Image (tube, rainbow, N blue to C red; front, side):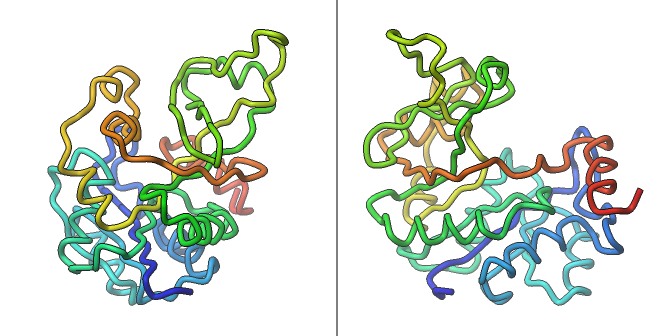
Length: 250
């Protein structure tokens, strides 16, 4: 894998819904460890991966597992800000591609990570990249908890919304142009720094979607279309139990 590609895995201890979730155990290893393994399986060497945490317990665990780790401020509002702090600490060059892979996604497909890396390297005209997948049901389209991506020509993201969109006027039941957003991002270092220096955008505040800051201030986002969405990560204890069942532990 290209050494100009780095992967940062935000692993925050203080989740409001499930405190300490990066250290919850699956198959005798903490959740964040499984995320690191998925990134390694995608072809990224361990020395190009950094766990970004706000807690000494996670840092100590990562050091014991011989995984690169950086302490970051507990005041960060988002994982993106945490990733940006690591970028500044490590002084990575502006043309480096950074992937933000969430630390609560232990079963994220390595193929998705590798695909977004390739897409980011092959489409450097997009300083930010992400992934989407086709929406398959109307109920999914109408669910405000599922973020819809409006995709224009050349895989350019036009908008992200919680509303049902886009609408086919000639064939209202047609959802073939409807896509679900998958929350994995690639950034050039220069775009990440620019993004984190910007104030919250009005549309971002309305929809509670961070990516709308980039679009609002004119930073283009490219989208990789994949066949299916990955398994949901760990937000609640029920999610944790579900993944334990999936991994054969219950």
